[in-house]
Length: 175
Image 1 (cartoon, helix red, strand yellow):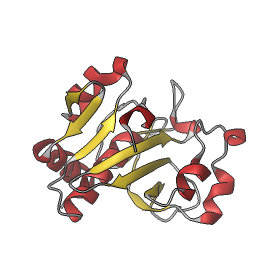
Image 2: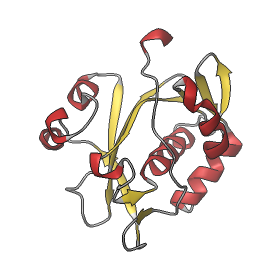
Image 3: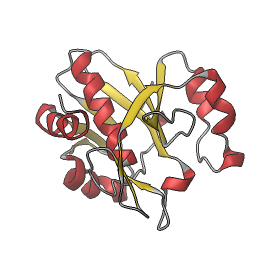
């Protein structure tokens, strides 16, 4: 796929947490990331406040789509991640927090960081030494450099290298 067709990522890393944090109570909840199933698609539509067409992502043969949920509560999706496994890295095609986890009145913090950390974990599992790439919106490049330790590779392409990936994975997954 050509770079020009890659979606520019616009997710905000609100906080790097050990799990996700309830913004009202301050309670921390352990999460799990699992493959999105066909039955999940009816809950993640534009009519329900999601910004992207996740059915289209799900249907693309080269992409793997994952959902972030709270342990023991698999039916409420906190965020979604679509990746493509490339020859030597994981490419994050799309990342989105659930509508109730976006904005000033979000319910949970740490969703986007959790999903990025999962992409890094997947990269280690695939033997890519944690390397993850994505295309950033221009205005968020500095944000990703500061919060994720990513660096700008070319134009809007961002890279998370082994060192930054290890920090994220250890923060979220205690490996």
